[in-house]
Amino acid sequence: MSFEWPWQYNFPPFFTLQPNVDTRQKQLAAWCSLALSYCRHHKLYTLDVMEAQESPVFNNKKIERKLSMEAIQVVFEELRKKGNLEWLDKNKSRCLVMWRRPEEWGKLIYQWVSKNGMVNSVFTLYELSNGDDTEGEEFHGLEEWMLLRSLQALQTEGKAEVITIDDGKGVKFF
Amino acid sequence: MDRFSWSNGLLEINETLVIQQRGVRLYDGDDKAKLDVGVVLLSTHRLIWRDVKNHECCIAMPLSQILFFEEQAAGIGKSAKIVIHLHPTLTNKEPGPYQHSKYSFIKLSFKEHGQIEFYRRLTEEMTQKRWENTPVSQPIPTGTGSQAGRTRAVGIVGIERKIEEKRKETDKNISEAFEDLSKLMVKAKEMVELSRSIANKIKDKQGDITEDETIRFKSYLLSMGIANPVTRETHGSGTHYHLQLAKQLGDMLQAPLELLSPEDLVNACKMFESLKLPLRLRVFDSGVMVVQLQSHSEEEMIASALDSVSDKGSLTAEEFAKLLGLSVLLSKERLLLAEKMGHLCRDDSVEGLRFYPNLF
Image 1 (cartoon, each protein chain N blue to C red):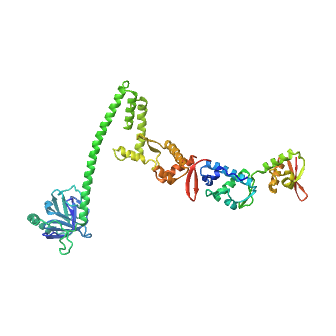
Image 2 (spheres, rainbow over the protein chains, first blue to last red; image 1 turned 120 degrees about the vertical axis):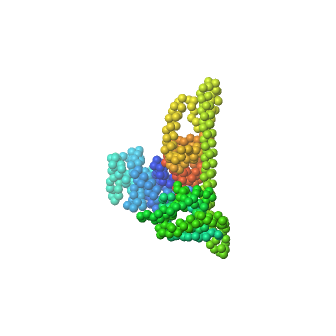
């Protein structure tokens, strides 16, 4: 299924950081939403800032508008504040994009676990993300680091415990 | 001193130099003339004086201007003088160092003596009146130098003459214009009286005049700028309101003239926006003009800006200026205002700055 661009994407002012505060708030909200849904659609978990500027998300060749580097940083900062983005380096050149936050993933995973009556079971991380049983689930194919965070989030809620199994990691659900 | 005219100091044909004396200071009546010490020359026709340092500063007066003259003996620290009493200025006198003088006499102060001989020669010339026998010819500028010393340069004197003529003409025009203005003021007064009487008639005949007629008359009065005197409410608050408004306008416009024509007032009001004053002149379709607060007109401006932008999809400041017939600066201000109020948003790219309706 091809990605559906929101109406703002073809509205030239969308690519200019608005000076009016109220307008800017709405603009940034739309950008965050677009960035996240784009990453979700393409299952992107990390972004390189330099590459991002040329990516279709921030660069609409059809209307010849692109978001400035300054504006991209503003959008990323907004995402970070909302918990959807994490910088991988001090220079802010690469980041993790969590189009679903760890808590949200954890919730999904736990839902699946309890739906299938597998509470109190133990899983390896691999089994969860790549096992046959989880195929078709949204969290199938989830990158390990993201999965780990999600389980850690559940752990905080007392619904799971991350354990070590053999050489790798696993989880027990409560 | 206003009898003197600028001169090039050159003698005319038939004019002969009689005597000259250095170290002479001129006096306008009892006051020292605003000239330095110079050389005084007596010719058969004129009394000439030239600045020693600046030879181009040279003035002359026909001897016929002299009424009579007398000696004034020297005193302690005071040089000997000759006091020369003069006839009134000729109307066709050429411009000189003095436009007017309250005195009708001058003094020659002889700082380096020589007054006795000068006085004697002056007496001779004034007795003989040789200038009457041999009137000097009108100055004819010649191109050749063969009559060197005889031709009179038109140059500066000609220019000064032209300036003087123009000044007189301007004076005349202004006087005539004000004549018309005075007549207009009289007419205006008549009109005001007429409208007042109409208003009173309306008031008196309130019952007899149809509502339609009344409305029409009221609108005539309004278009003449006279507040409707019929309704008590408007009259009461009207005058007070007008008084306040007039005071504000007076402060704002600070007209230096006592008379301010309606045209000037309107033109001044048109400048409110560019002067960043918080008032605006608004013109209705009927032609009636009102001055309203900026905030009121701001709303209108924003609404109209939004209309224009929506209509065209998007506008740059230049395009908007062309649409409104306003300066680019002013139209940009309006767009920025509408943006500030959240009605417009901007598209800033290499193509320039464009404004769109705020669809966010």
